[in-house]
Amino acid sequence: MIYRDGQSRVAYVYGDYAGRDLGSINREIAGKLASLNLPQGYYLRQGGQQEDMAQTFRWLFIALTLAVLLVYMVMAARFESLLYPFIVMFSVPLSVTGVRVIMMVGIVVNNAIVLVDYVNTLRRRGFPRDEAILEAGPVRLRPILMTALTTIFALLPLSLALGESSAAQAAMATVVIGGLIFSTFLTLVVVPVVYTLFDDLGRAVTDRRGKRRGLKQA
Image (tube, rainbow, N blue to C red; front, side, top):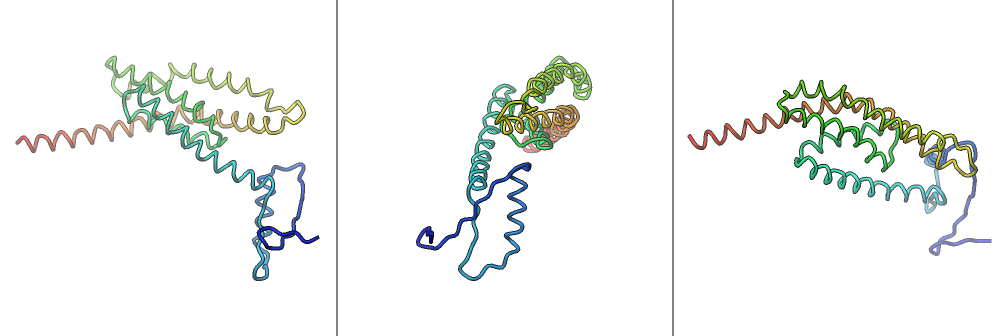
């Protein structure tokens, strides 16, 4: 039989996979196909689950962007500042060491919010910035670890893939657990550092504006 697609002759090659993930198989196939010297007028196109996965990732990127913007807007309203939510959002890339999942935006940000909010509370009470950071770390360590551990332990049964057709759920649970483990500990180190850097930057900008106003008045 001669198959046609868009008035062009086509030949379909079907295959299935087992024992490996679809992403690594597709990368290997793409590498081998790229090395082929096709005659003029011939081209190759991957379809099936590969095409579906590529489309899914495109939509996931759009959804991830919207999720980050919405989370930032909520934190800006909560902190009544555009700077502190930006500091908190630095914890999101830390989860990439373990996972790139939209739900991690909300989970990982929680730890940074707890830490930054308490630092701001101590500063309003009169604590110097560095002292407030050193005080907030040990105090908020316990609730941060409890939040992460309860989520991790809740996902452990799902990550074991004990039931039938549970491979997809197990993979999701595994990457979320990995992302939480890495991001939780890195957040406790990176977020305070970023906080001090942006606080110094904010002070420098404020001082420059103050000097300019003084010069204009003079």
